[in-house]
Length: 110
Image 1 (tube, rainbow, N blue to C red):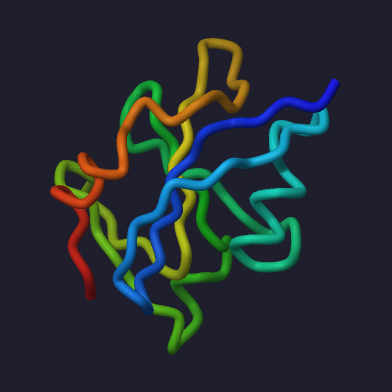
Image 2 (cartoon, rainbow, N blue to C red; image 1 turned 180 degrees about the vertical axis):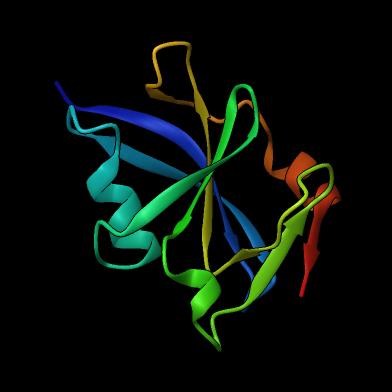
């Protein structure tokens, strides 16, 4: 079964926050996330709250020229594009509980 997950894309180079839809082909949206973030499956999730994850390039902090950002309340800088989704008690990717407007108020550009 193919499902659509509501997510938010953070693009630090353009300093934009955009609502997007990820396609879940029973893979937790892995293919959709990989295609947007880095083109490979080398991405990781930064759990910013119990039910919120920001997916980022696993090698992002080692790279230059990809932009960086912070989120108020999360102690670490993130690099490259970020995709915000929700996560449930079983670790499954779900719709982002945060809106585009909320993220725009807590994101900082580096």
